[in-house]
Amino acid sequence: MIDVRHFDSLGGANHGWLDAKHHFSFASYHDPKRMGWGALRVWNDDTIAPGTGFPPHPHADMEIITYVREGAITHEDSLGNKGRTEAGDVQVMSAGTGIRHAEYNAEPGTTRIFQIWIIPDGERKAPSWGTRPFPKGERSGRFVTLASGVEGDGDALPIRTDARVLGASVKAGETVEYTLAPGRYAYLVPATGHVEVNGVALNARDGAAIRDEATLRITASEDAELVLVDTVA
Image 1 (tube, rainbow, N blue to C red):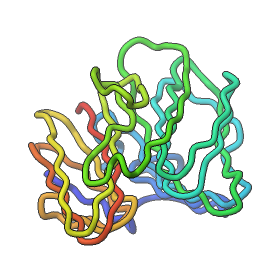
Image 2: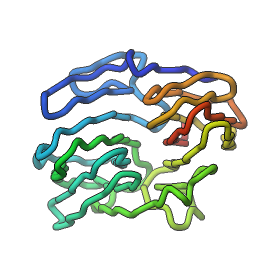
Image 3: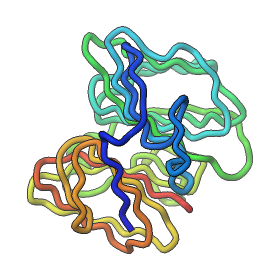
Image 4: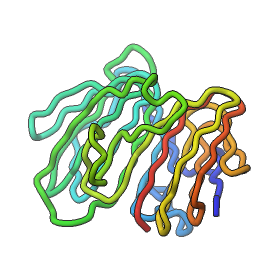
């Protein structure tokens, strides 16, 4: 099953400094048919104006992954962490028992991000934050795991949930495959480009909610940058 959620059907709000689109119910946007997908609760497509951002605010009990598509995001939190994450790279915040953080676009140009929230599993723990670069060359023509709570995923940023966040860069005419284990849920968004997933067309920033598909065959008709979440039901 592949359920396409076209970009122009997404909820959202334009606050001037922030133009936010929501793949799932979030803030003032509520759709009972779009409350999440498996343990994936939030996928926001945010465009942030230069010199603006999210002031300090609290979170708890959520795994928050930020994939930077353009520009850079600068993070500060109540643990004293500070860092800047550039386009193509990823940061992870395990909100755990509670944390306050701020996210700013300190760049001269627009920053665009995907912010992904996944419900944690297991025991509540102290909050944590981390970031790392993922050179696009490493994921050319294949999926690379960017963040994971699955044992054995090595260099991926750790998250506290049975899920993976993956990225791939696919050139026009190329195909990449991903095996989805039985009972798992996947959500795929092309950050750029146009692709077909098992014959179903996706434009840039469309979402595809996927289950009961053993193998995902993703063919690009133009150069594409893909982000995929694989999670429990």
